Length: 231
Image 1 (cartoon, rainbow, N blue to C red):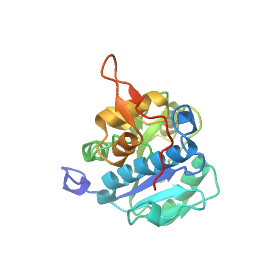
Image 2 (tube, rainbow, N blue to C red):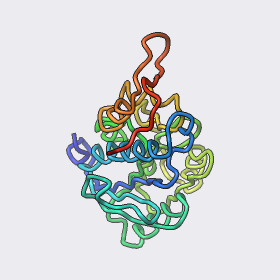
Image 3 (cartoon, rainbow, N blue to C red):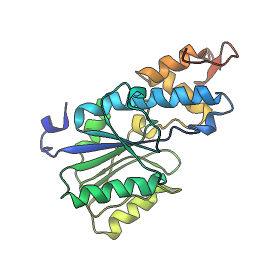
């Protein structure tokens, strides 16, 4: 179901996907080489774009150097030398100065388990600001319908976003989702990608030689200790 097909939801939305391509996913260094981390980061980004692209205009927000052909998807790229939070808020500032032509949905690029049902869910939530918390105090998706709201992606962003919305007197709603709450940062997260992912990311990990352990809790093991490349 698209957002404009859902009962009571008729608002256009612009999707922002922040993406870090340089030194991506450094916390996966114990199990992945720099090149493997880069390949996995792009695979997860492609999976996210495949899910969100049918909901509205999509902009990938990144540092300079990102090439559209690396995305395998016809989306806009906004390149900025600013740090993440400043770059997002600069985008929001420009959007507000243009009269707020659409709501803004910010979706992190490492939500490898994301599905259309999840996007439908957050878009169907009432409120001026809708937050989808991640594990560890982060904010994995953020929907703002107000030109007053600005993001706080520094440290524990979820409580900061809650406080910001309340300070501005905006109606706040919380959308909880296992799939959207599972961002991929640590080696232990990779098992979730293989178990629940549906796109390029789980296929990439399997090509790298990862497979689920046959006993105990969900863990990945690597069948061959070698570097994987795209060639």
